[in-house]
Amino acid sequence: MTTPNRILATATCVLATASVLGTAAVTGCGNDRTETSALVEQPPVELHAPPTRLRWASFQGMELPVADQGPKSVNGAVATGFDHTPPGAGLAAIHASVRMSVATDTQWALVGQQMLAPGPGRDAWALARAQISITSEISTGAPTVLGYLISGFTPQAADIAIYTRQADASLTRNTVTVLWQSGDWRLLLPPKPTTPAVAAVDTTPADMVALPGH
Image 1 (spheres, rainbow, N blue to C red):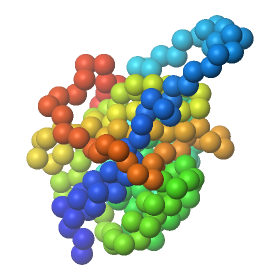
Image 2: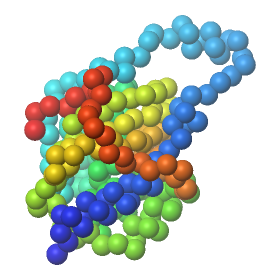
Image 3: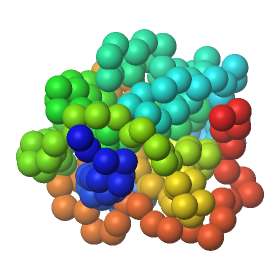
Image 4: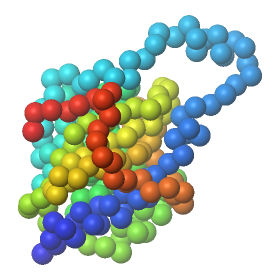
């Protein structure tokens, strides 16, 4: 039987592949004056708007947030249907990060196919995931998702930091990027991370979008 500590260690190892160069993914520059004008005329996006009608659902021993902004559909280990908005991106980032980390041996392939952006990063993750085994859920000491902070957002991509409280009361920040592809947000995994995706932090930021109620 897989122990909670082993699952958490595996999750941290696998999540290390989720580190991205957020600025390159989210912010782009163009010299076309018409394009710049169109961007300026767009209404501002509220990055700190919280999800509405927040509730929680369990997956593999972890509680995951569900709201009006998504997921609209949960089929086994796969959660899809996130709004094309900052709250939708935040929720998608949490679900994809957790589900890819704790999905069992019979679940992870579908999670990868439907919740991760295709590319060499996803391929590298699949090769690494095939070398380990997760057969049971976290029975005790599951991490608690506290909230998220969006540092960059466009209709095509979003950079997101997910804040989590571990079983020993320590806090961690998991930095990821999601891309809008085929009508949904998908987690982007780089083939060769340059920085760790998960880092210890002393406190959560004041402007974090808090996810209370669990």
